[in-house]
Image (cartoon, rainbow, N blue to C red; front, side):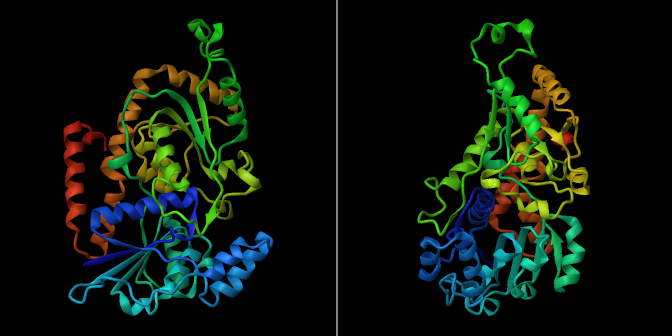
Length: 405
């Protein structure tokens, strides 16, 4: 089997796309896949560099460049296609509109025996291009979208839950210097209360007096704010590019954090800390509970997740072990008291760090998802992927934690 991954990494550099590019890298290294990354045309770059307002640029891009397939340079034929075995193409998009990337491959349908699409935020049906109807199977991370998408496009639609690179980036260590981490959408009241506790000199007498804990203790609270999106980046997706760095650094921060805030976004719609430039996350348009990436990133790092668990079937199925998530009340003062008490319970925290990591490795690593997709589509298991699956199983067996998975 010849495996190819069609990537948007040369078109957009953004922290929310970095997870997709990291997943593509895992497919490349474990499955001996070739990454195909189209580059922008000079028209697209010139428009982006012009002084025209951003909204006008977007309209011209959508109505002129994209409509006439002028956004990316056309690739006549993908290098290395096999004539003796099936050629399989995987394209992963944040939104349905990202599948437009397929049209930069000339006669893409005739070049590949099987074309698989995986779309993260698949709830905006109108965003999907017409070429979606030629895809052999569409995978989505939200079960409730499977039947509606199948009815809309008349193609097979299946379930591909979110995951994390637990094997390479996960951690179950107990040496964690950050008390609480937050990123993305969180209630502003919680952020303000935790920031107030952190806005104190670490070496003040009250902070060093154990009798003053938890009310006067200096809290190491860290909040990560995403960087701005960059279209048509000059650098490839390597350690020198900011979105690659963000992906690694947020994993490192989580691995050094005792707790991380994680709130279902239907709860934070009216309570969220405002994101840069007043932007709202696209998921607000769906307005239904979703078990998002942060839960998988958190458990992979062994971090204790506190907040509001999404009330959806995915959360009940995917996070079904003890203390996988810890609920906080609506009242932030009461919630912060729970957080401070939990920070004192070292034994419970260490148990959570271990349980979250080992369950993530055993059940929610990228490689587990790939193996499930290959099995569902009756594709041969790549040797490198099988070797890493065997390694993960051996690690889990030696840990003695399989009974908790």
